[in-house]
Image (cartoon, one colour):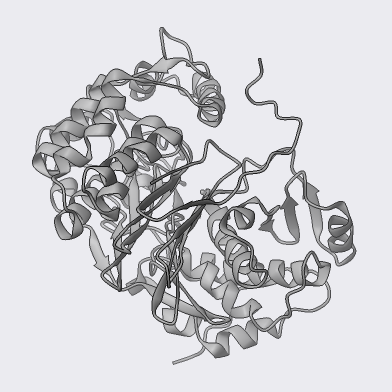
Length: 533
């Protein structure tokens, strides 16, 4: 039977519970988080357990060698963690030029930046966790060592990556990827059991040393040796000097709610900027004018985001200006009745896995981690199971651009966790992963929730649009045709996609402020699941 063929529409109901909830893109990972909650862990412990499990059960989107961000609601206060890693200290435009390169390769050892995910687990556990990291990572270790059957969406993307890699990745630096992510020299099939004992061993060492083995010990040594052998930039010194950063989350007020994101170098501010622009428009259900205004607001926000977002210290415009009332009003004034081709804001002078967790005490976590571009760089460190990210690909080599490559700099980062509050009380975590779709997904989920009062599952089920560039917009296959036609008449270059794979994969947990009851929605575009009790 064809596990990717679903000819009839199906419906999920919102999941409701009151003692704990974990929502993510893979059922086994959700169950790992719930197991930790039942053992006495809190929402942070559950988030770490789920995140670690996802590196095993959804390696097509994330891994130990990727980055992470988290928003943590703990005892009525919101905390932010930026665990995105910087470029290696020897990585520069000059170094690329000396190798005869005029652009950063998408794959291989060159675009590899310092992985931040293991540091996120250790930092979260140290500051907020109740259980030891060794206990929290136990479910992930078990999945890695004992194996698990490949789920449907996971298998689909695994097979796509394998075919592409087999055709294009022929040099020695990629061979360990094939050894790790194949079975008997072929790609695994949906339902087939796959395991990675080396991955489990690495997780065990991370758990035992609270991450030290990865950044300063045996694993760091293996990464360093591999990079030296294949002429990469990342070194043990880069790993040893890395620490994740606790940050103050940023917010924008939208129609009675506060929408929170991690500040740049992440792109969460793009969703906030779009909401800030769009809130001056009227919202009508399934209305072409409403959709037109939403798309135009997102185009303006994203254009500015791509022009300005990088490390905060290198941005030519500050966060406060981009989230100001003046900015929102001035950008909204540029929206007309027809589609525009946006240009960056005139500066005043002077594409991942996502999870949400909640516990009975009201603590909640919005967490995201990614290897970027599927499996990332295509590089796996021998005897570790560690697939490394290719986040360095996003640096600019234009010296006039804010995101210009510098040694030890964090690049523009696509992965973003979101959080919603009302009257200084938690509503809950939300997120939509998927490269440059992420802020567009955040925007659409929030407008569906706030403007149209959709429950969390319905907000995720809503057919999505995606601005691609210039006047190009893609919509999902089940997007209403009359709206497609109306948007086309407004000058949008509309394309109906063949499937929903590129439109993001989200999770939501809302908490009733009076009763404490949890309401969860999960993504129909992937193997999404909610574990609750």
